[in-house]
Length: 87
Image (cartoon, rainbow, N blue to C red; front, side, top):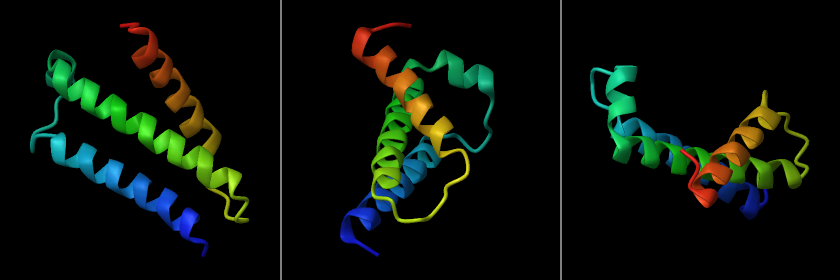
């Protein structure tokens, strides 16, 4: 496997692990909504996951990732919100 492909997959894994580490043992959506810092951290990692997925798909490895397009599209929505300060 190409080093760049490994890097993209590693970026995805690290971002997922970070999101998991941010979450309290008892996960409640209302608590998530009330915590701006947590929401922003999770959103940023979603952007990282989506960008890494986009680059992974462009590598044309022949590996199909279920819902890769949805992951990339989600990244785009969050990126627009972060870039333009849309709440």
